[in-house]
Length: 116
Image (tube, rainbow, N blue to C red; front, side):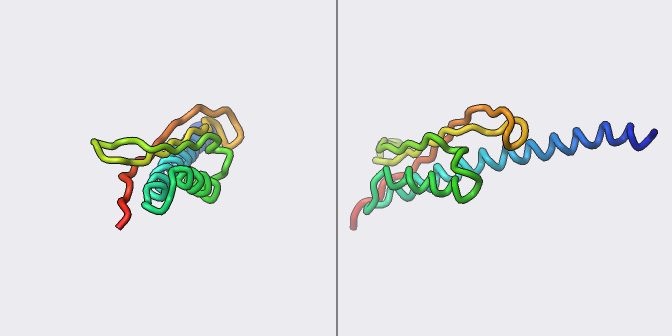
């Protein structure tokens, strides 16, 4: 009887902690990929579209390409300096890997390099 009372409390708590870890992992992976893509696209010998491709590849390598369905890159200014912004829009699973999900949008910025 005591075992059942403890399991009723411990199992949902464990599953909740596991789910929070999964959500944070996917969100942090998307953020890291956006930043990496922006840095790559800001190189003097690259285009912003190269940064978007690099971000897609980073997400696919780390978790799955289905988490980053919309990756865009564009030239912008960052505090007056020319920069590249890579934006990743995806869905973070709210309940398990295949359950319902909510949308998340993250972006990475990098100042463009100047050719030597």
